Length: 331
Image 1 (cartoon, rainbow, N blue to C red):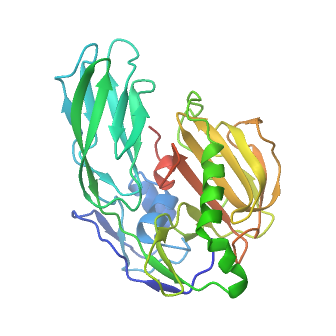
Image 2 (cartoon, one colour; image 1 turned 120 degrees about the vertical axis):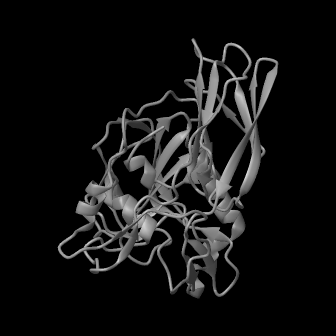
């Protein structure tokens, strides 16, 4: 969705001290990203920068987000597991990866937040919902008849808030039943059992760095309380801009939807799927295999949108996660 009225102060702040960089004369966001071994997109999202060319001398940027504490490691685990590692803490809307060291592939699962996540290729991808309250949550790893208890610490992200006003003719787009049915269709297009397809960090789906709405923005409609959030990244591009696959995958959905307009989803394996909304034209068909850089369609203004743009999102087993880290490294 792309209709907005007002930007309010961020709802949440980082819980720990952050690394910052003060912009110097002549510096660009690209140069700063190189200096800190990160990406322009990650800096844009972290600092809510819509136009990467509009930096001010003296502007203070967050350059790493929350410092990542050391991995937690458990060696008292059921055979054949030799060790289990997982993050000390994970930001709302990000991915916690549990890695298992074993002499052979391990079969099992992790129960977390009332969902079950399988062990795949000796790791478990745990998506942290963007609205999950900060705190410590139990995760139960089960292998055979044995069970190990882990703790997953969720910390607050830094998200803005938009108050949106919809014209009367678009109120019907927010009918809960209609939203739920479309969401189920999108999630249902993702094959949770497909083997991993990607081989490295994801590429940008469009040739621009202009992000007009970052992931996780809290949203309220018509002055009501915030009850939703932005599930991806919005790229501000002209209508007809080519949209490319960021990584290898198989097309799960390619059709017109009510809210998302012309839409495409890609299955990347291990329950990871990406979505592309509001396209003017679709260039792929369901079941088609694509490689990174293959054309998926063209950006547009279809569905619930008030201007040409591309909405790009990544879901892990149906739960939206921040796409920006996928441009830097992948699990």
